[in-house]
Image (cartoon, rainbow, N blue to C red):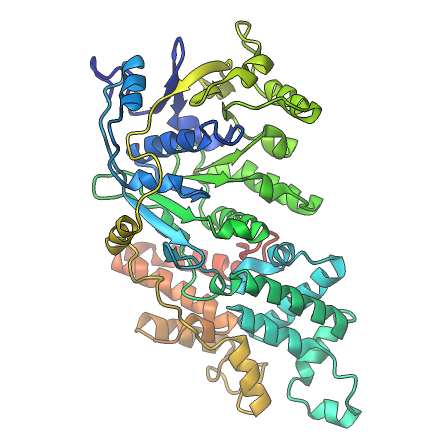
Length: 543
């Protein structure tokens, strides 16, 4: 709280970011209107990101941020009262108090943080096609594969599931007709051909692209236990928001994997979170570093969906802050949704640079006292042009601001410090061991060996892997009373029933049994929709 000795400290409803003639405040109530942090390399973007992340965490708002260079990891350790930090704090009438923040490290490769995994099914064909850089024909075949998997109860968890399914839908044109009829995978091949001509050459191309993806380490990303996004949205024992840091130095070596992964996270947040409107403070703030990678070579259909998610996720209580070198890296439709702006220095050495500076200046509300385009090229390290939303959501006039110093450590932490933090992590042990459940790969192997149940669930009402509606109810009852069946073994119907049962169990355990009937209906509708209709951005849509 602000005091006479600490005039520029955060208050209950706004964050102190920096100071010029007047302090620059970021309103928590408008923080879910998204934002943009831009500037050339070495001008202080990472420090601004850390200052904002610290402010949100102090206010009880969980934070997720990608750490490209490792510099952001210092937020987990106590800051150091160095001379230049104390000098800047004194210039701002800010009593410097070293601090540290509860931090959870995540790593797609599971090396410097807890593993982050998603299933192939959750990723969906559109995002996978972008990740694999497929053309329209190849993307169509991938959509056919997902449709066949849905109709035959083949759960796609990891890349070997997808590989085996692609092999299964390739037509056996070299075999005699009689041999093709005896093929245990003939129904799957026929189902695939019913959607169009699936050729061996196209499937082969997809398989080669999957190999490239595997060589980049993506095989560690696809699998179980899959990430539960609510684990990002937690506070610590002191009520501060936990800072989730994605270790992305190695991930950045595969830019398409990096950008697609973060887009998947955004889409999952959009699908899973309920509508809450404008809150006094966000439920989560999401920092998307190197954001230009998200938009590079993205087809129009995908750009439209990104724009839609950015526009609508505000009502879910999530603020998205893009971090990139230049505002022109972000498409105009998305840029228009980013109300809170921090612009560090840009250089104007070439005609293209000069055009970029002019474009950046036009994104701000003009200030008669400033020549914005000129000031952008004159900013020193730690300085920025700032415009935050105020009052009824209108942008304030742009101001030249000195960014406040962070209170946690600036720079990377040592490996032993990271290990100590992970040893006390609230999700320790939850994601660290891979679970390889029965899924499409195992199901197809059993079918070839002649041991699989029929795909149509005709093994009996309530029995077998499918089991029809009674089988779904049976799975639900089994879940309530403690089944050990893994998610990968369940058919689509059983996944629905298990989701419903989990909801019922949680409601009863929480002491709100009176609302079970209402929640059961809502969960059934939501789960059925998510199970049967695949979302355009990956994940599964609610009905």
